Length: 237
Image 1: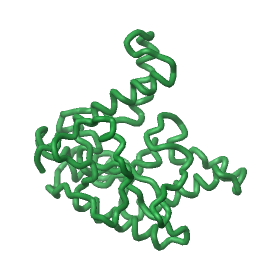
Image 2 (image 1 turned 135 degrees about the vertical axis):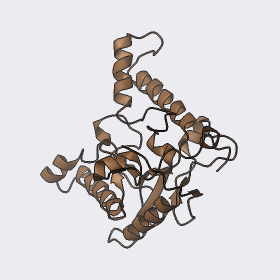
Image 3 (image 1 turned 90 degrees about the vertical axis):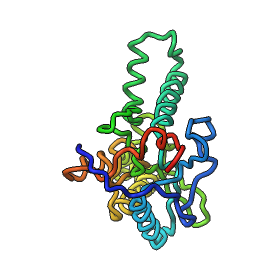
């Protein structure tokens, strides 16, 4: 999808938006750069997030948004892709250095369904590098995250937004039905605010990036990668 960046600034999330701390990638040592914050988004995206949060606070369930991750420079994207591949290999009992290359390639292919390539090509920026994408969940009014039937960043079918749809129909009183209802509630509030959800990830939403443009049938994206590579590493901007 073509990109025509509208030039909106990257801004810190306001205090009324709940952040999940400690930030997981920072805790792993991901290379954000000095003074960088992962809790930043384009100003127009923040306005839409606040709208979705107000919708949820006024819903009968009285819940709110809880932000897991937002802006992510390309260096961090590369770090996390490597981490995700290594972790998935470990869970499958594989040594990435010594395992059958075909098996490692299968792991890489599965991880690629959830983690974008850390591309520095301005025509193909990873979604989070644009400041237009956010990973989030629901929390109760006291800020405690609600169970959604699968962890953020989980690799596999459990992460697909409608994974529990059949279970919800066949056993409406089950935990699976509750998880499906919560995923639907999150999706509806974010869609009403103008976001599109990643087809493979119940937690990933964006507005204005290439994925959003493709899913919404828009002719172009409004946000490209934030700044030059120095800025992408969190050194300015």
